[in-house]
Amino acid sequence: MVQFLTKQYREVVYRARESVGQHKRDIVVSRVEETSGSLQETKEQFTDALENFKQIVRVDEAGLGDCYRDLKRHYDKSEACSIAVHDKIKAIEEVSEALFKEWEQELDLYTNRALKAHSRQQLKITKLHYKRLIKAMKQAEMRIKPVLLAFRDQVLFMKHNLNAQAIAALQHELAVIGFDIAQLIAAMEKSITEANDFVFTLVEQKSLPHSK
Image 1 (cartoon, helix red, strand yellow):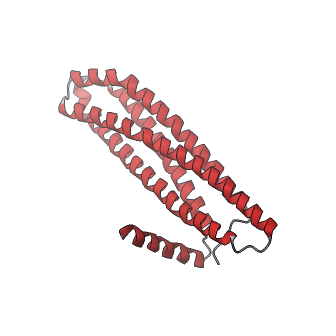
Image 2 (cartoon, helix red, strand yellow):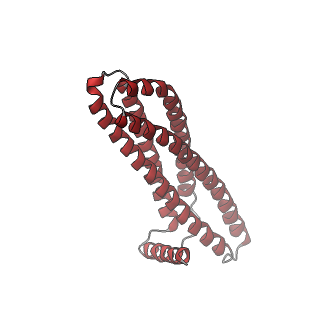
Image 3 (cartoon, rainbow, N blue to C red):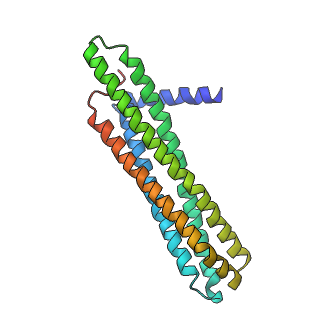
């Protein structure tokens, strides 16, 4: 019931936006661009966090308190970025589902077979681009969680052991976390490229259906 009401509410929002000239296609483009920006921000945040790790393993015990606070701040920012990415991917899925549903329904309104076939082919191509986009974004998102959990472990360990033992543990984990972050960044860069390709596809297609 809640899911049904949420869907109905979204349809009302889409119709309201379309009444002032903002069609579902425009909303999809906007949300994909926003998510691409969030992925870029997350990539930069994890890169900064890795640099912070590298600096911490070079300090002495006297500076551990400040290092812990810096590391915790980076963790909190990374977690916030992770949540933002998840929410924005979900938003893309919601409006894209509405766009494709509308497009498929409006195919039946064509009387010209050639135009209908052309529009159907555009729909097929756009769906393929969309599937690649969502797959890349979700793969990037999946890589965030294990990195974030490993990051949290180190933050907690440092909080509980503000001494040389904490530094030794960080030194041991640095190579592993560094490798994980490198893989995460590669996945995010792939996802950003897919997002740019998808936006280009939508913008280039001039005959996408608009609600009347």
